Length: 392
Image (cartoon, rainbow, N blue to C red; front, top):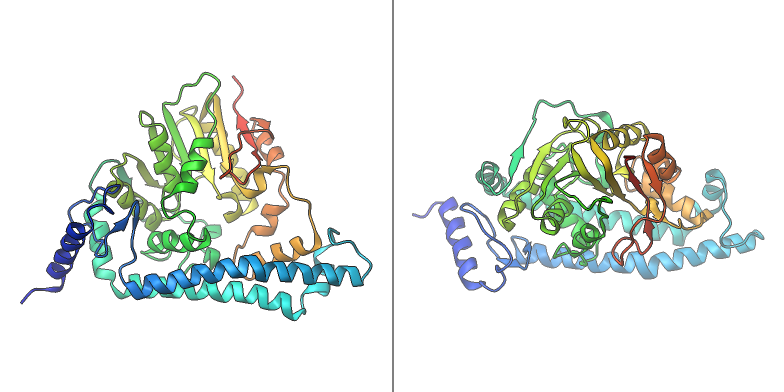
């Protein structure tokens, strides 16, 4: 009788034989689990019905973010007009709550967004936990393999700011062994299928500016989650020593496994962005992507300070965030209300502090030269990005 694990290995082998063209961009390792093959860089979800349900959730998100959100914005404009206020009026939060908080259409828009996101997470959580033995074995097999390396610190102190279930993700980034798996497929849904080949992260990596002297020997990527930007940075700078840090052990574990599968030599480590353990002046470039809206304001200040410390003179700090794109969108009453719902409803716990922070000022406060006219690209929010340079 064939045992379950042997049957899984046979199905993996069969999928690889049947789908050679789809596996052309991935380099499997012994123990790699992809029973339904890959499409380019993306391993397909293990079951067709789950893939179909996730596709439906993604399509529904497009409707929610598009037509339904536009109707909610039009309703907010009508409410403001009835009060004799312009559509782009900026108002205090308590006044926006009074105006929009009980409107049925706006409530439907927001709660449809929230409920669709909750359903997406529950579907992914059920799949990975329902087949935990297989997926844990796959990670264990990859842990000690190269290219690249993995450093886990299971006894590391996890700050309180990192322990909540960001984006409503079950267990957050630190409390579930499959945090990386869920994050990767969940954010493919967030990106509405525009990043299934990491194309957005490749665009971000290509936008990263060089130091004035053009020398790039060492790169540090902070808050890497499942490592897509880190891998893209290594592919852009193949001769550089590229490190990716995240507070979540399950995150860097998945990131390392995926980098091994893609054959990309990256060093992933479970460490704090505000306590990287590297010496002063060690890196030519320090990057991050959508990190600062997920940390408290004191943590933001500490991370900025650490980035400045580990940069060498002339080195570049390039944090990529919606809030760091210039010019910033004008504040509006509806925008402020939506920021509140993002924090309270979708569990982006630090979002309102993030939106109220002047990141150019924070970059200057840690001794870097702030430039509000940093690089831009079609994939980098379509606007210039704030960057910092360490004085020489």
